[in-house]
Length: 251
Picture 1 (cartoon, rainbow, N blue to C red):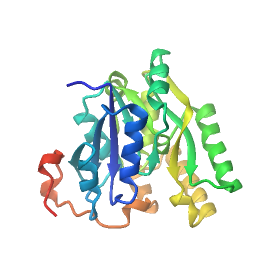
Picture 2: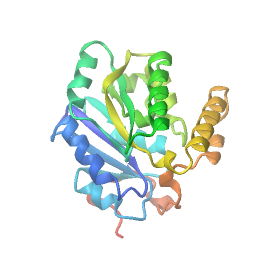
Picture 3: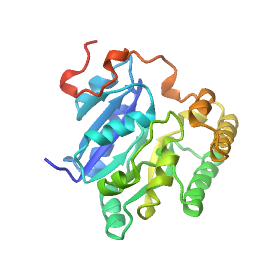
Picture 4: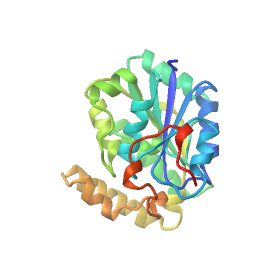
């Protein structure tokens, strides 16, 4: 059965955050929204938690490959790509529908952090990311990207990249459809910035500058360790093909 929305979430050891993320996704897009979690080899209860909300697929640890696998399996007319630590806002479905009706077959939410508190540095970071999206028409996965099925397939979808898979996708989808920044904010965990804010920001911008200058994202990924990637994947080569939640490997 074809759904209106398919939510696709790449994961790796996200048991602490995933349940809340998926509950909020269903609240934002409706209880009938299709949920697909694509796991990269978690050692914790991530897959178990995901199975309580929807389908679970397995592939190797590579965010671009995980997102592409989820999109191939999805049946929704609109694909929404959400990081495991990002909360969609209430009213998200209406905002996406309005953008699509206005001719934008792809887009993203505004960027916000949680918990935010009163820290000026977080407010400055939020302003900078949203300014970049408005002026440069680019976005990252922290902003919960969306695309209609037609737009996704027309642009070729997510590339098999471990880093900047989101930036390359936005560049590609903008060539085939309008791209809109929605008025609502998706709230992403501040975990990447909490311990070493300035160092994290500088490293991110340095890697992004190198990427835009033509550096291979596969080589740049050596210098970028996402919080969920601190452990080795437990998926052996024989399990690299995606599977459904009904056939997930025993623990």
